[in-house]
Image (cartoon, rainbow, N blue to C red; front, side, top):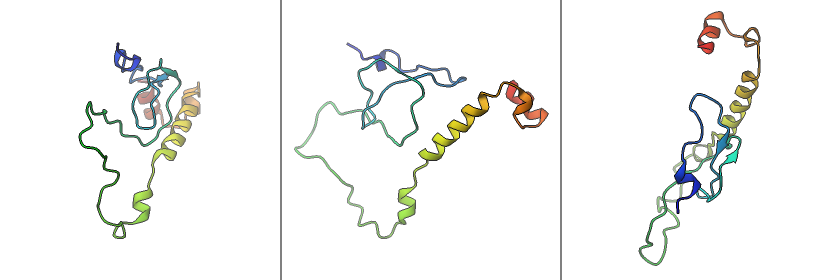
Length: 115
């Protein structure tokens, strides 16, 4: 039996604000649930399909790439999701403005946005 994710993987139009999303577990795998209402918050996940068979007895827990002293800690700690979620909030506020005169853009930009 297929899960709701595989029955209908695309829930929203690419031209409007998302109204539903598939719930994901901590590893980015879709949960066997009906779609949740609202937009999912941005987060860094990489959904990778689970393997059908586990080969070997143990799993690799780390990449042996050294101790990390040659890499900047700031480069490793960069996380763009807070700014993405903040921008989404500003865009939602902007979309709620009903009058194009309140948009604060030039007349050319106004016509393009209305297009």
